[in-house]
Image (cartoon, rainbow, N blue to C red):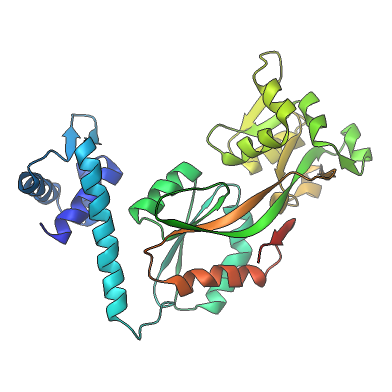
Length: 305
């Protein structure tokens, strides 16, 4: 058994395709296939179930891949320990964030991190929570910024800030005359929501149980958008109203003819956190994320000490 073979099976499990796994490992497909087959023979089990259209990890193989991933992480940590005097802020940091956070946080946070750690280039990945969870577990990203709750074995979760929700209205909507709105009021409107898979959609439905009931009603008008920016355009065209994170509240609203209104107390909100593998050796690099947040102002948020 070799570390190279472990890298091969982790890549195949992640890509579910031998060709793509070989590309990710910078080797030819025959070389990777031989390495995987050799490891299977040594262990006396089939790690993968192969078909013409797909590659699936067997139940025994899942355990082997998980252990291989842990071994690779431990080797990485061992190398870091060996460099006792090395700079943890020297080298790339791979950060993921969900779609409803990344576009509104990173433009302010990235310049701060560059200033704090000029030798630490950032690799940014925006995705759904469930995809980021897998990428974090597989080591494709070092840390992710997600909304709570988020629970994953061997992963540390550090709350960063609390963020309010806000109503997004076309400028001619009658509610524009109000200073604040009740969250329950939106259940009677044509709502434009993010599609399934977005955790923010679930958080809005949780804040407005009446909306959850109406979402099951086939007579109720519901419209979905693929992103907050798509929803912004749909609201501007008069299709309905929406609820968005307050950090996303003021993007070109005046130009589009949009107005925002806050909700009555208790205001609906979400808690945003940083999640990372406990075995990740560069904790100082992660500490800079919270330090960077202290140096910027994210609208509608309150930092958690």
